[in-house]
Length: 215
Image (cartoon, rainbow, N blue to C red; front, side, top):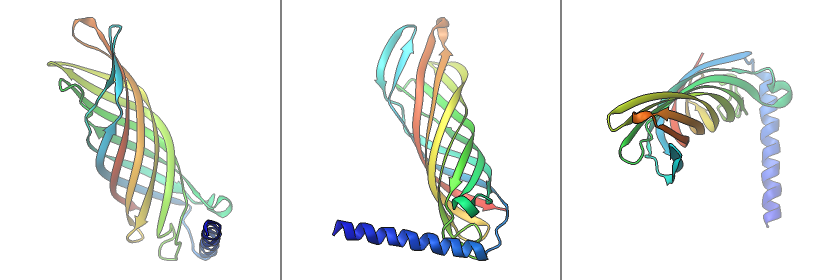
């Protein structure tokens, strides 16, 4: 029974790709698809080890918090003819506040660039980018962190990594809704009162959704 289900799913996938290929051959697709997006959701930081002048506290919990930001990007459709996918690039800005220990306030803002790949599905003359598409991406940049400990403030900017995946659905040719999950990681070192150094790695998962305008 499981084998029959697997074969059926494989056949459906092949049919879907065939229909997509036939539709793409008939649809006039623009070489570049430019978009701007806004999003909001929630962030879920991982536990982290905090080092303060050689002393380490393990598995410190960080607060979940709202996550919001924006994107500016573009897709290149030429690879679709041979690879069945579009290749893209985007600039991503994401802000969240993963406070810790009840006394350390953190404001984190990620600035980065991502490389993307999408698989257009349901391509039609009125929807040359597809009625919907799944996508994945990977990128990097910097994370700026503002830290406030017992009234003492500081800032630190560190290299950051981001990986992401999501699904976008077009409402019209130019407007689409999307849901996205992403992972951001950066290691920070910040001086605090008395000359001590506060070191920790901030890793977080974000579940967000938003609206995109395609031009």
